[in-house]
Image (tube, rainbow, N blue to C red):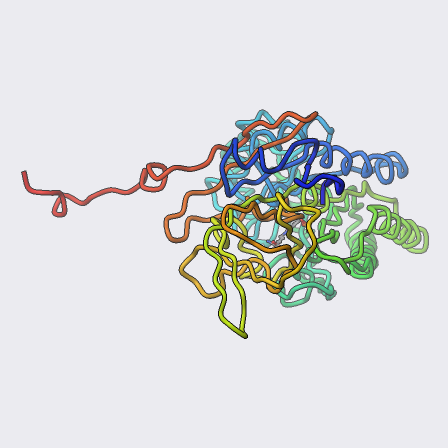
Length: 436
Ligand code: LLP
């Protein structure tokens, strides 16, 4: 949630006055505190990378990605997970070391694979045998050898929103853990001349507070490691255990330190490798939200306030589901406050709605706030993950700017879109051109 200063009438964030930020850069505005990102990376370093031998951390770029974020992650010495040609292109433009990039996705196409393989991508996480064939074809054409991991569906359930569970048996991602499937997939990968199988990957879901689904998945994947060792003599070198660690959104959410998850994962893998007589592979973690989520806030300006007597009071803001799709998509909950009345007594219950032509464009329901008036600056907390990255142009609304605060200095890292940006790709067919 950043570090708000509770003695100040105006909310201070990362050493900056939030009302000044809104005035200088306009609203809606994503604001990101670099110190929080670095603090999270440092916790991962201390509590995971330095504590356990033979480990790696990869940031899941889908949570929040742009040139500046790539640079921050590179300087932290972490790898990067990309999930599309577009994310990969961004990493290339940022000069991110390609050997540290993991390429995910359940339907990568040939041109994405060509971009990855021709740039010597670190790992491709293969979702199916169909994809293995595509990779083999492209790698052969480019005369490259590609390191891969197989994504497995561990068949576990996680307690989170059904839209962000990925580990269950009927998931669209990965190879189901069935003896015959696994043996065939590993056999085929071993046979491929242009592919080197490094091991396995799983990802059980997102915004998870209980480490049980990670631990259960390690158990199942370790059994797979044993199976392929006994049946095929294949020794697993790497195991990527995905991300998914939950963060603070609203009071009542548990705040979990990284080692709540990582110690449990490590304990389980060590125990299993011992009992099954396996070598301990390199263990990789891949968090996105846990690194960036609490580093971000969003600032909005309140416009109209509407009261429906005995029913509800609404405050309308200048953004909404275009900059934060999560409440409409997942019924996600957020904490919010009036930045310019930060320590004023909260006297009313009010619902914050966006400006889109959509009834579900409600950002926060029944929030306790001081009297809300036009011109107030509303701040929503913990918006660093999956807000900017899921921003959209519904109703032809330009995307908001992103500002990064480092050592008290705020700088734009993604410019606000303008109307011209919105129609830049429009074309008029000849027969619709105006008569001259
Ligand atoms: N690795 C893989 C293969 C993933 O698919 C994901 C997220 C991650 C790592 C990072 O998960 P995290 O640590 O950020 O939970 N749009 C949704 C979240 C979708 C997550 C997709 N995959 C949301 O806004 O909640």
